[in-house]
Length: 139
Image (tube, rainbow, N blue to C red; front, side, top):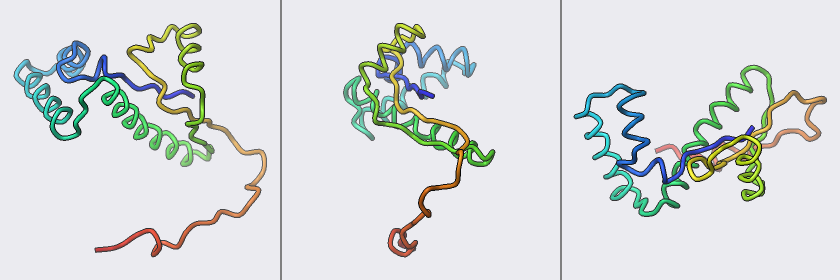
């Protein structure tokens, strides 16, 4: 599965996409749409310094990992194994998305891939973990 994220073309504060989404999908009143625009502008410009479309596209891709984590957790709860994949050829993946699926890669970018399935056998090696005290500090 390829998880797509929006790009700076759609996720920039005040974009036509965000305004339409807030008005038509969320059915928010105009004053709330304007309030959200202001909050997004502050978040992008002042809080996270997302100054270019590339910065916004990278931020949007990181949001896709929230979805990825939930999908992998849900799969695990159903007994389905998964593996996140970042090591793919972006240009070739985008070409396939455009030609085979009609995806506008100016609007959507592949953020991450994930494979789901059932393992044929048990793990080849025992699972190992660091000690909790080595990675967590309780304050």
